[in-house]
Length: 540
Image (cartoon, rainbow, N blue to C red):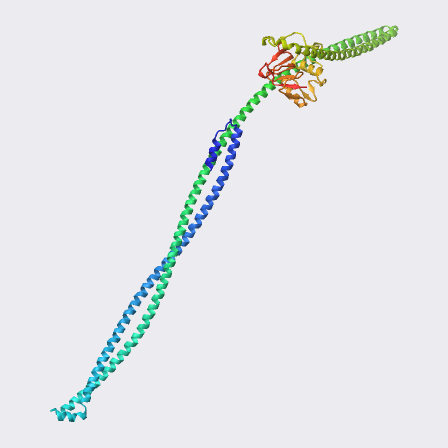
């Protein structure tokens, strides 16, 4: 499964994949890989537990099998021993049976001998001896001797019969004892055979169980090996994806570092431009301060001279007073005239300052009035220009830019103090002219360099500053909007006077084609970029 994920992660998409998207995709694949790796570890651990358990069971079962085999071997040995004993008992019983039969045969023989002897004895008894003597030639002594021999033979036969009878009795007793022993041996042999069958059955069952557990161990071993192989494959896949993520992270860091470097260079360039502008402003401010300082020093010098003159006059008066007490009244009169002259001089200076201030306010009012009148005239002129522009569309691009040394409307009447216009921009610059157009033709009549606490400054800042005070900034030109460009050290702004159907525009501007002077351009392809185009439009 991880191989498929890794393969899918490496598949190129239809569009160019960014480093962030690649990192996100690889991170998702890594999360899936780690989840699979955890599952593989759990499965490997479970397989190992199963294997260990089955191995333990196999060892136990093998012990049981060994015990069952030992018991079966012992039962076989005992069965063999009992079989041997039974065979011996059976042989002894057969011998006892034979001995009893032989004894009975011998007893029968002895009894026959005894019977014969008795018969002989009877035949030789006294009642017959007479007959025998009569009928035979044997004498009485011989017959008596024979009778004696017959009695001895009968006694011997009787003793032999008793002896054989006692022997048969002992043999029968031994036969009964042997029969009982043989029966007991047969019973033990039967019990041994039953026990042997039981132990053999247990041994077979233990062997089957051991074989089953061995098969389980083999299966668990294979499962553990498969789980370990899957775990190693998941670890390899995870390592591969992590390596790709590390590579992508390093590439992202390098890209961010490069972007940061470029941004730092742009900020440095912007800071350099702002520094140059500040230095220019500071130089202008310094020049103004120097001029004011020179005026102050001149006034101090004049005051010092007046003080010196007053002191000289006082010295002369004192000398005259010392020399001519009579002229005291004239000196006092001269001092009074001097005081009156000083008061008159201060009053004249205050009157001149008030007059200058009133003249400046009047000039500003006249400048604004003239600016509004010029703007109204320019709007009427733009209207008539639009009506006649359709007949002049075939003019070449080389005639689209017009240079002029005069200022549109009455911008030239705008008062400036040490090169700075009344709303805080340097007079004759593109920003000063654009600010004048905004003040005189839009609702932002109080627009100045610092508006609502936001500093507009160089043209390069205008779009950003306008957004901060809520003015719309976009890429849709309209008549009466300010065209804005950020290229160059300070940027550039111009006033849009016409928008054509092909997207080009006409502009009026300052300090572009004419240094610190007015010019117009027509059919400007503003989206071309560079120093000829613009990046957006500010709709005051």
